[in-house]
Length: 476
Image (cartoon, rainbow, N blue to C red):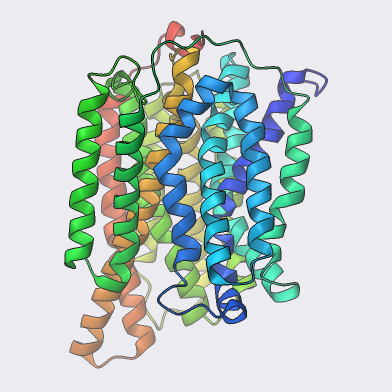
C-alpha cells in the first residue's frame, strides 16, 4: 500500500502519538532522581511526578472517549497532541515541584483525549481485515515497546543532556504528528443525541482516580493501611454506582452493552491481566539489572530492547498477518501462555546464578515480548469491533482504561509481594541483601505467572468464537 493513499498517513501519526502516551509513563522514572535534586522535592512528595500523570490519565479516559465521539476523532486527536506538547514544555520549564506536578497532570488530561482518539482513528480508517491486521500490529508494537523505549530514552537524556529533555522531547514529536494529522482523512459528520452524562463523568473519574491513587500508596503504606483500604472501597463503590447510572441514563458515557459483549469482555480481561503481570515484570527487570547485576540505567534500558523487538516481531509478523483469519483466542491464549513461560524462567533465578543474560533474561524477554505482541493487536481490535461510529470512542477509552488499571495494580501488587517476601527472607535466613531481593523478585514473578495462567483460562471461552463478517467489518 503506497503512502499516497491518505489513509496510511493515519498509521505513523497515530503510532507516534501512542508512543508519546506510553513513553511518558516510564521516561520520567529514570529522570526523577535528578529532577528531585534540581527542584528540591521531598522524598515523600516526589512520587507525584509519576502519580499526577497516572491519576489524570486514568480518571479521564472515559470522558476523553466521549469527547472524541462528540467532536470528531481527528479533531480531538489534534487538540490532544497540541495540549500534550504545551504541557510537556511547561514541565520542562518547571522551577519548583508544584509546577512540575501540575504539568504532569496536564499531560495526563490531554493523553486521556489523545489515546482513545488515536485508537478510534485506526478503527474507522482501516476496515479491510488484512489492512486492519497490519495497522493494529504496528500500533500494538509501538505501544508495547513504549515502556522500554521510555527507560532507554530517559537514561540517555538524563545522562548526556538534562532531565528536562525527558519532557522537552515530546514537543517536536507532537508538532510532527500534528503536521501529519493534516494529511489524514477528515472526520465524519456525527449527530449526537441526548445530554452529556455529567453524573457518569464525575463518578467514573472519581472512581478510577481513587483506585489508581490507592495502588500508588501501597508501597509506602502497605495494603492494610486504612487510607489504602478506604480509597479502594470508595473507588469500587463509585464505579458500582457509575455502572448503575449508566444502565439508566439515555446517553451513557460508557454503554454497558460494550462490556456485556462476550469477545470484547474477553479482550478487556486479557489486556488488564496482561498489563498487571507485565508492568511488574518491567519494574523488576529495571531493579534487578541495576541493583543486582550492576547495570547502568542506559544498559538496563537497552536490555529491555530485546523485549521490544520480540513484541514488534509478534505483533507485525504473527498477529498482524493472522488477523481476521483465525479466531482471536488462537492469538490471545498462546500469547498469554508464552508470557507466563517467560515469567516462569525468571523464577529460577538466584543471587548466585551465572550466565544470567543468555540463560535467563534473554529467553524471558523474548517470550514475554512474543506474548505481548500476540495479545495486544487482537484485543485492541476486539475493543472496537462491531461498534457504531458514535460508540467507537467509548470502546477505545474503555480499552485504555483497563490497561491503566492493570498497570497500576501490577506495579503496586507485585512490588508489595516482592518487598514483603524479601524482608521476611532476610530476617529468617540472615542472607545478603542481594539474595533477599532476588528471592522477592522470584516470588512476585511466580504470582505474575499465576495471573497469566488465570488470564488464559478466563479468556479462552470468551474469545474462542471467530467474529462474524458483520462484526469484523461494521463501522457505521
